[in-house]
Length: 558
Picture 1 (cartoon, one colour):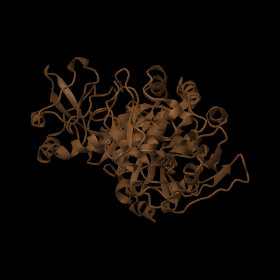
Picture 2 (picture 1 turned 90 degrees about the vertical axis):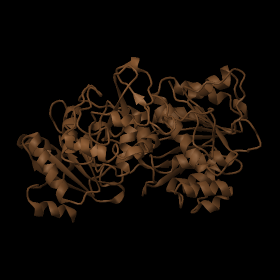
Picture 3 (picture 1 turned 45 degrees about the horizontal axis):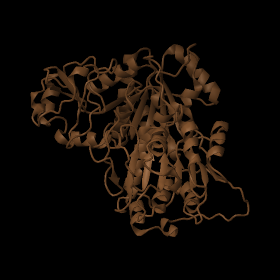
Picture 4 (picture 1 turned 90 degrees about the horizontal axis):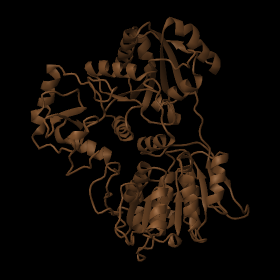
């Protein structure tokens, strides 16, 4: 994907590689004679005269996703007039919105260096029914969708080598005696008071002498902000060499951490950050003078040991983030061990993982000497605050009408609809979009960047309905979701109820202590088999809902 130029959106040609890059003229949108529903894809003509797609996410409207962009239907004349009247679905605002969605993933051109007070300036790196999502993709999507701290009731467990060493917690960021410009950046990010893990971790991370730490916590607890704050506070700006090294398992996760550092350090004008990720190339004999390096293990190891761009023995703070993802990525664990061997004995080491199983424990033991272990217990998904209903529908058109009736009769924050296959998800998206609903579609064939753009818009409320397959059934939380609909019931290959997936699906609502609604659309046969199996498994009755009865639907608002 080409990098952004002057705030415009580049072109993406999924099949026609001979088209190359084409940056449309300012009036190129006026030449369009064919456009899908808003906001989606605008077409321009490349230098060869063939069609070039311009990306407007989320990809909703009147065309199916699979194969990607291989079919595109003309929109009705009404939609084309609407497009012309609105200046291209919001005109340049849409372009700016998409450019914002991609900052950090498709980065602006620059000198491969960023100031903590500026945006990053680097270059980029060069089965239909079963949607899989890797640990790295899941972690990245969690970081994107959780821009605010999760309010957690989970307890913190602390294990330490010396049980008599004192532990302190703080209730305000002022108690940390931070530099004024750094404290200003913390508040600018919207952190008013420390999260539960920050209360305990920050005094440890900022202690003098420094202490090593292993921390386990779920996404959204303020973990990244905690170690970034420690990274920034340890920098001695007068020393013009790398002092802080942060490893992430993937390019995208490294960029996300860098964005947090850039935002938090936006008033620390002298602190400089460099990315060590794929696509970053330096001339031979370069000596890096940035204070913080954020990158992936392979690139960092090459820069430090093969090219001698910086001295690992001078690193005073070493952060290894997403350790469980690191283990799942081939080669990263060994590279991390090799980097660790070059570090000074006085280097402070911070090790973070969402899970802490035996494999992660062995990894941690090889990286972190004499650590203090902090574990934030994961809050298990529960059915306690989710109202469950079922509606009998014999075919997909009946299901669609049920959704329309329910959606029109209740006050919906945002709704997620789960389909079993991409084909069904595409059909439902197209039908809802044609009927004027603001709908987004998320399924497995999308790239990480496209998924992020879709989720970002949904999280911001630009679409009220998100249709998805099992890509989002686990681990991704969007606080505003109040209704979950199982358009297709989750079943295994023997057509038996998949109770675990059911729990994860409806667990997307009723999060963080709020009440949620789950609606299951079932056939008569599924009612007597799948639904009964789910009720028996969880020991809970699922109530019948008649979507044609407005009084019944209205009761959902209570």
